[in-house]
Image (tube, rainbow, N blue to C red; front, side):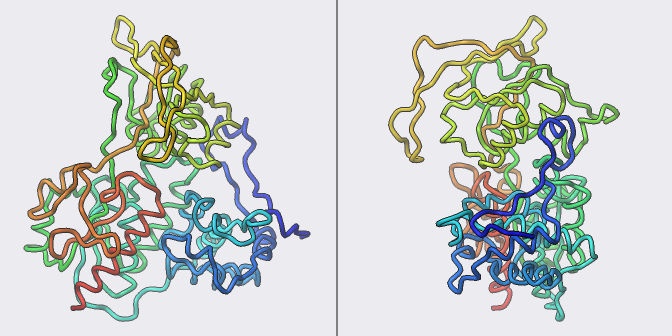
Length: 462
């Protein structure tokens, strides 16, 4: 296969018009020939900048070299030393601002497609029944992990590799956290990818108990004092949605993105035979500009709605990944930028009938460094719609902190924990991911899970 070293090997995707009508995966990934061709573009730098951009510290040049040589199993074992979820990361990590953002090849050309290569290797390993290598020696100590999302799975996998007896406690009926309830099937297939990654973690000896709500079913104090767990890692995420506080938010047809995506992804509400079907809107307005907003918008589109994204800043400030915005536009989603909702309108039966908005313009930068949106007087207008989905971020559920003695939280209701090792204000209890930082990316949560595992190992090795 002929390769232009300055350009990425193109990755195959579903046609935009076709995929807008189904929930099949958009990106089709590389085959063996394409992966080896893309890997050949890597400069194999001795002082690899790409690794400095990876929150879970994968030896990127080493695994890419193995792909280049066609040694895919060896490439997988290199990745799995650092990452419990390579097939997930290869699909949803913001590589453009992390590993690929630091790739030397990207200075004069396009960076190496590190994420697509990671995905290829992980998919190849799953197809060929390759598993991560378990611990050879057991420590004889029990560790509890709360939450089976990316932080919890990563922490549990790392601890199991160290030889600890690990049990994950998950509140929902299915393991995976945000990977199963938050990210749509067309970006992250559940059965073919997420379930198999979880099975790989379980193959290391990790046990998962579902339908256990910490703070209700049992508490952290009881786990440590009565159940014999020597340490606990909290990776419970941030599932409490935020709203704007504008008039009409209680109308029928208003959803948080969290509810909308959970019902569609986990409860399969898009299926008309589902026990909990979701409304099929004619015209949906999604408020927000992050990755979750793109996921909600693209889901509503697939359910038959004319879909608008309303965001108060310009396209340059959209926090979503460039790839997600590109895919959304290709599929026909309409972007109403520099626009802010001020009221949700209702009909006589209490159902959404429209969103009253006001035009915005960008002023001076605020504390985030982005230019502050300022209302344009007299610019109000109405977008007619029958569904509004609020995607304004989430915060941690306070149930765990309120039922655990000595566990401190900050003013944002996030658990206070050290960044380097995850130690909280309670001895033997560690935390990481969205429960500590608020809503962030999958790979940052994984990095926090690794830090927590390291901190727990040091704590239990004293």
